[in-house]
Image 1 (cartoon, one colour):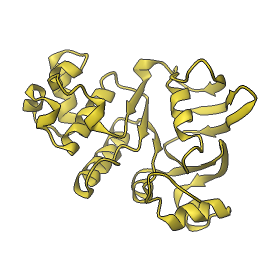
Image 2: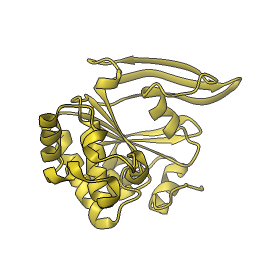
Image 3: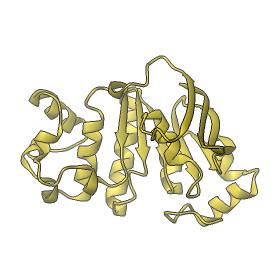
Length: 228
């Protein structure tokens, strides 16, 4: 998938102006306000009408709901707390069972409410729901932020397995450098809506060309909001 041009403006202010390819697992990293969330929302067609958006892409698939899976950062707030898990899917029971198997969950999970599951289990439920329609592109919005280290490791291993077994493209917004190195081949560094560095993860992290990138690396990407 190639994004030829993504431009987002508010009145006369440019918010995002970028072009990039997603040929495998790609991380999107930058400080708060760099344009990460705007980029995800543009792909999801979820930007407000008050913004002026120009979006041109080339892909073997259309960017429609059934071709895109979205995994938000907090599983505790992304599911309805008063609804059993089985009712949060929109597919037949056999497909639900297949999806639970795919993400390593027992079938009894379907009869539970979200409050009866751990954070790691909830995130796997969210991933299963995102895979319901066999998407071609998976958008990840910091999916390990709300998890402890053990659950985080489980989720990253699961995502690695899914990308290989399902041949799915991943665009991964994250502030966690260990997640980047464990999951992604490519990395895009954003600043003020522009790409300042773009390439292979190892090359960028080991030999950053820009001071901004070096500052992010030195911070360990270990805070929710980068301040550099």
